Image (cartoon, rainbow, N blue to C red; front, top):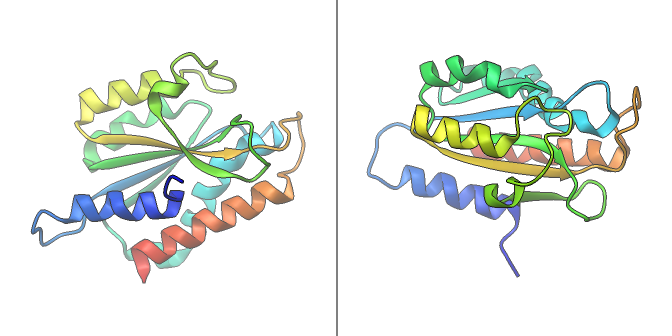
Length: 173
């Protein structure tokens, strides 16, 4: 059984932190999606929850961005921040129960449609890896519905809350 997304994230951060360094690794979380399509806003809701949590204001090694449907518009901010890891958080069709959270290998999204995004995340990740020189990962949340003008479903809201709690645990505890 593969490690949980939480264990994988913790291990990834520990690897970045293992180089006898004084400072913590710089990490950027980018919420991706559209407010207009129900659970497609899951990544945005994670970003907004983190931005609203005032405890993160004093964490200089963490940058949280609302990428919306065009996260490529934030590459300038990424260059300035110089992260070692960028995590895109997005609703995804993974054939899992709604609200399931999983890492999505970049190679598995190569052929996927960009859905509400203006540029497929696989292309953006390759560009960022070359341009910014950092690791890029995608954390997917299985959506229940993407109906126009629908609310976030309760399983996806629970996933948003779970990600917020884990980021809080990793960066503030």
